[in-house]
Each structure stands twice: as structure tokens, then as C-alpha cells.
Amino acid sequence: MEGRRPLAERLRPRCLEDFVGQAHLVGEGRPLRRMLEEGTLSSMVLFGPPGTGKTTLAHLLAQGAGLPLFRLSAVEAGVAEVRKAVEKARETGQAVLLLDEVHRFSKAQQDALLPHLESGLLVLIGATTENPSFALGPALRSRLRFFPLYPLSAEEVYTLLRRGVNLLGLEEDEAALRLLAEAAQGDARRALNALELARSLSPRLGVEVVRSALGATLSGMDRWGDGFYDLVSALHKSIRGSHVDATLYYLARLVKGGADPLYLARRLIRIAAEDVGLADPQALRLAVAAKEAYEALGSPEGELALVEAAVYLALAPKSNSLYRAWQKAEEAALAHPEAPVPLHLKNAPTALMKAMGHGQGYAYYHEDKEGSFRQPYLPEGLQGLRLFEATGEGWEERVRARLEALWARFGPQEG
Image (cartoon, rainbow, N blue to C red; front, side):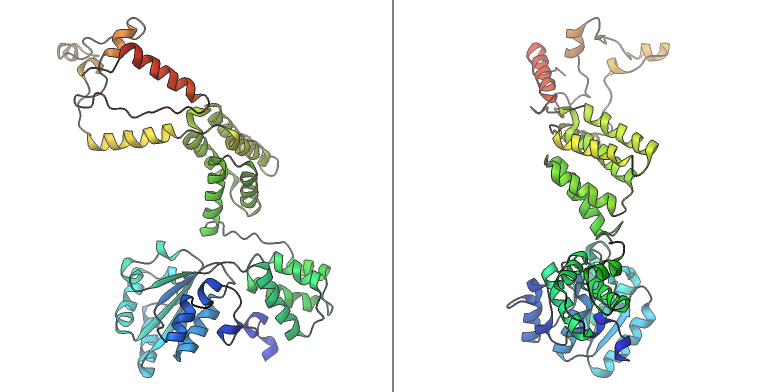
């Protein structure tokens, strides 16, 4: 029966000293170790990628506190299951409730936990691969502590694999284990499952057997989870920071991880407008063209168009003057939503409108440039409002020079 249990389950540590990884939580003087040493176990959420030890830590914490542990999955459990766990906890006086995928609990389900957390009857340990701050309500968040878990290092995964080799009675092959440790991408469960599969393929562990067990290497990216948005954020910031190599790396991670290339193309268009702007107006044209090229070619041929746009954007001079000016304009529009348009700027398609003064005194730019610039354009009370400030980056230096020349020639507008 023992042999039928997954290897990861059979290797689950029985004490904190055997736990591998997450030294920031379980090392000397760190919060989870101190909880156990001081007997002050409190409700918490452990969040991080799969295979990093969330469930194992929950078991060790409950065991160390001498409390029974009840496990529920938020995917399947509802308020009724929570009530059953509460009844069992009352029988023992206090219990730990391990709630997998805690971010999936609805507000009603979260509220059902609150009085029992408040009374201390339940100690909740939530486990999730998602960022809990987006899903948990304020009332529940205020009763929890949040601890992030990180992917294991290749060396830490290697340590676990050596334990697995010993348990399975295999002859150790360092090259094969190193390959497996790297390919696991910080996921201990993935590594141990692959090791177990490798043993079923051949009684002798080796690099080729491990490669067969691994199959197609999976990307460490949830297509629409935190990992996806972290990579998109890294791509955006690398382009903004003009780091070409990081730009290429994160773009490749996203493409090979299964991100929608058209989503990435739209993101590049946004970067061209937000971070390059008027410093290089050609950037926006190229980004739009890259999207159209991908739509015409598809993968993999069209991916090179995205690469061209990404590299161009990374190398282009940067200016967010348009982005900042638009933010200021939105704020001004919200602060003065009813400010009347000056009469001379209003259209006058009818005799009545002309009689009301619409368009009267308007200076037509091509006939009266000086008068055109001196006439007020903003509503009364907003004259002198400055929203756009050109930088000295790239083409925008010419824009700044033109603005300065206009102001020097005509002076500030009069109301």
C-alpha cells in the first residue's frame, strides 16, 4: 500500500528540520519557526507556486501545535462543510483548518469562518497559488497573516531528489538528477513525480530516461495567473529601462509559455504610446505594424515582427510626457466638467447661433497666426493651465524647442 502512494507524499517531512526550502519562513528566528517554538500559532495564508511546501508546512504547524488538522478544498467545500469542520473542532476544543485554494471562497463562505477565527476555535491556514489580496475580503484579511513561498532553488530540489532516489532504491546518477532539478523550475512535486515516472520507464536512472520522463518541458507560467502578469510586467519595465537582452528574454518566456501573441502585440502598442511617445513617433507605427504582421503570418513566422517591435521600443528614446499630460487633462476635466466653451470657439451653423455670438472674433490660424495663438482657448478660469511638458528625449526635443519658441514669440495666453 505504501508503494502506491505518490513519492512526494511518502517523502513529506515529519519535522521542520527535514523541511527543504523557504528559509525566510522556517530558518532560525523566522516567523513560522518562532510560532512553533513559542506555541503561538495564528491564522494565516501561505501563497506561492505549486510544489513549494504549502501543504507540508500546514501539517507541520498543526502537528507542532498539537492540534488536529481538518483539510478542505475551497473548490468543492461550501458553508455546510465549514460547519462540519467547526463541529469537529468543538469536539477537540480547537483545530487547524487547512483550506486549499482559499482564494476561491465566496464572501458568504468567508463570512462563515469569521466568528470561529475570532473565538479561536479554528486556526485557519489557507493555501493558494494566487495572490490572496485580490480575492479575500477585508474582514477575513484583517484576521490573517500572509506568508509568501518561493520556488525552490535547483540545489534544494536536488536535495529532495536524492532522498527520493534513496527511498526508491535507485543508483544515483548526478547528471540525471541535476537535469531533473533544473527542469523542475522550483516545483518539488513536479521533480519527484518525474523521478517516479523515470523509474517506471527504466530500472536504471540516466539522462535520457529523465528526458523521456520530463516530456515536453512545461513553462513556469500560469497563462492568466500571477506568474503571467509578473512576466508581462517584467517585459514592460525592461523595455522602459532600455534593456534589450531582458526584453528578449521575457518576450521569449511569454511566447514559449503560451501567452497570446496578439495580447503581447497590444501591450507593445501601449508601451509605444505610454513610454516612448513623442520621443520617437515612429515607434507607435512600428508597433501597430507588428500586430498587423502577426495577424497576417501567425506563429511562428509572425513572432519575429513582435521581436522587431520589442527591440525597437527598448532602443528608442523614452518620454512619458503624453501619458502625464493625459492624466492631468483627465483630472482637469473631472474638476471642471461644466466649464463653458468660449463663444468664439463655438460652431455657428445657424443664424440664431451667430446672433448669440457663436464664432464671433475667432482668429483663423492660417490668416492670423499671431491672433490665433493669443486668443483664449480654455474656459474662463482655466487660462494658463499647462498640461503638456515636452522632454529633451529624441524627437521631442524638437517639440520642446517649438513650444519654447511659441511662448517666447507670443507670450502667455490672456483670458
